[in-house]
Image (cartoon, one colour):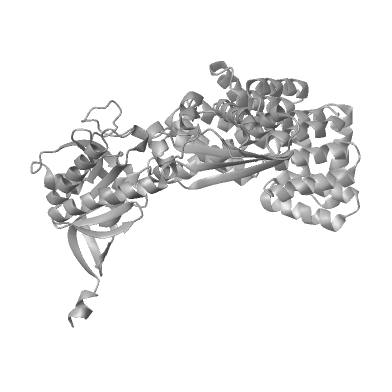
Length: 597
């Protein structure tokens, strides 16, 4: 009877203390045996102090421990005592070798399951430990309310904290005692909150030369330095300077600790290894808050010219990371109960990256407009609205394409009066000019965008498209190839392939045109107008069944598309070669069954 009752799940109110070692993986990397020995010694001391204060050890997990106390005052006094002893034991030890504990304490209702404890009360303690400074203690408001006036301890109010997987904000306080002072914005004990990491904030850690060849050090250091410079060109990005980043060279690192130390959201780390005449480079993007891996990539290429290879790797990484960071920021914004203007901008940009369909463009524009409503001076949101209008006008996703082009040009002109060196504003002004019989001017704007940002692969793609509009389709493919060299997995890659297909059709090579257009749609099927130009090329080749199927796929994405829209809105060029190709496109579309309108 007694045994049956003891196994029953029950509840009780307890003080829960969660603790772990800050930077444990880094310490193990420096000295595995010594770190394990030091942890055992610290734990032996802490265990005795826990018993003295009436607590019990619920469980240990690697470098972490979960404790339960019947008294919240005892829990706080025990935590302070342990941290004081550990601080004394760290005296005389080099800063990078010190073992520091983070502690979180919560008072809450818990579930009892045998010797284990579960529930939100436990989870909140663990999350508070995660936001505590190394050597520090963070407590919930329920703890603070109970111990205030009962312990001779000073607390700093950290304000409402959004803790991972906890449904409501938790007000948190940090213990301020001797060295146990929270890392507040100005170092004051009464600071209301620790600064949150800025959006798009990242450090590029020095790439590791794992091949053991010291002659490769200059190459991997060059990749790190160039990538640091090039990522800073991303609008709104905060990139930690190389001098700070290189202080971590050759050290085992804890990315979550780096995130806290540098107040950043993302860490990029990588390695390079040369084997014979080939060089392999591995990179990974990590969320500094959670330590989770967001993206990874590998480059494996023959060694020809190391400087050219360095430039190519840096360009590819910068382009890919731009999209990856936007997507990560959009996911963060979705979880925000009160998104601000930049949160909404990132959500709009993420929708814009998904593909060129009426639905996606409406979603993107909606978020950009909400961002501008909150902050009318948000330059990035203004460019976002213009990007949507220019893209919708160029891709004939609406019957008022020319009005969209005019609106985009007005917005971009305003942006460039405020920010003359905004590369993307120059880029999309170029697209508007290409869509309104000014392809040569548009190409010049894209070249200006490249002068401002050498990694802007999309500018090479637009230039290739401009050459097609000028009736010089034979020159399109080399520009598209350069875009692919810089950004082979670009969100625009499907459009580049379709543009090569248009150029091949202009050269009367419908077989190649079909091959390129199909490749583009295989990369991303969310490009409605591509189905209609593919259908035209298929019809000219006599493949009418396939052409009609392509028309139906296009209409599923854009039910309002008609040849009339194409005729009315297609004011891209008055070049005779282009106009002749356009008439062939109209003929093929009619054969394939595109609605006349």
